Amino acid sequence: MSKIPFSELATAAYCPRKLYYQRQDDIEIPDLVAERRQLAFEYESLLAAAPPDLTERPIAIPPEQFRSNLERASKLDAWPELASPSGRERLTEGKDCRGIVHKVLDLETPVPSMVFTGTPPEYGVWEAQTVRTVAAAKALSWEHERMVERAFVEYPAYGIVREIRLGTRRKAAYRRAVRTTQSIDGPPPRLKNRSKCEACEYRAECGVKTRSLRSLLGRLGG
Image 1 (cartoon, rainbow, N blue to C red):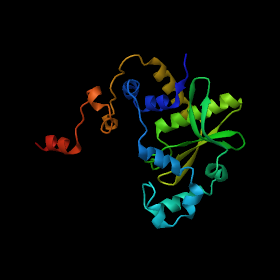
Image 2 (image 1 turned 30 degrees about the horizontal axis):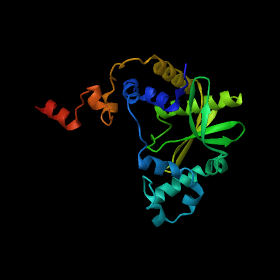
Image 3 (image 1 turned 180 degrees about the horizontal axis):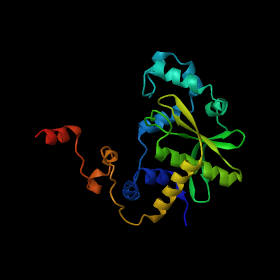
Image 4 (image 1 turned 135 degrees about the vertical axis):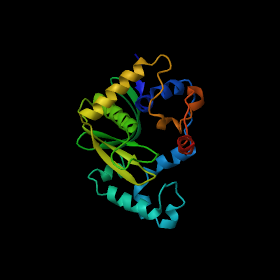
């Protein structure tokens, strides 16, 4: 059986039906995604940059807040490796999955740091991103034959870096995504949580119907 791409595991954790449609499509990385991902490899120069210079970069928040977040991240024990990683964009293969580990940090063990260009949650990490990060850790663990029990998740457009421990709950989410990915051979059922459908690029193919808050309020008031 072929190894599952990290990206497919993340999509399966978010919406299995989306993965079904995604497999039939050619995905291109938007320019903004590539530009924001590049920020994760320029932390030291971004810390030293003046606010007017930061406004020219693809950050998602005001320069002062970005700088404050990045200064907080610089207090992490892994900061030297996060700012200048030993491994960059490394293709890694594990027992079940394969994909690009954005940064491989040379700490007590090889530790992955995965870079995401969207909006971070208020606390922690989105589940789909957790699954992708666990996949990266398991692939590194398989390659190096050493346990990997922690990882980092970066949101460079916000200057945020979060350390996560790869405990039982996160590993269970990864295993569910593996099973889901391996079982897809036709369109899975639509999600009950339709909030995920609003911004999905496959809404038309999926046939899901969503209503705006305004239309729902209109129905309730009419």
